[in-house]
Image (cartoon, rainbow, N blue to C red):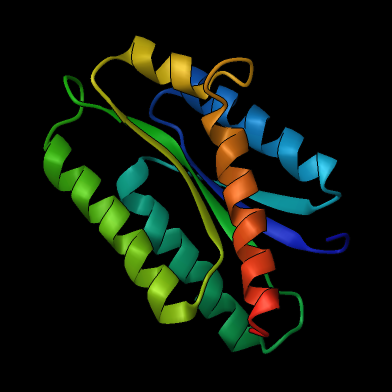
Length: 150
């Protein structure tokens, strides 16, 4: 998988959680010898838009410098996120739409939790390692695409 590049889109609402998610994701990508670019967005709602921007940019440039896959990282805490159900539904629905429409390899490390402490538990690479698992999922989906000759 050397020579590939993954786009990590990270929502920075809860910096400590996102830092842990990113740390886990980067560790997995580095272990696989995969390069990456990071883009920061304000919240999980904006993640699908930035992935679409990246796709559109590649379409316009008509270049081989494409992202092999995407990793979405962030969290929403039910007691702290205004419109929690709507935001979560729209963010994940937007990602699913992009995956199906553009045949993307995507790993999702967006935590939807009840408390900030829950998010930290899931995010820490030594515990839940949700960021690392999202990177692994992305890499596995790239392999699936290759196995199916896409």
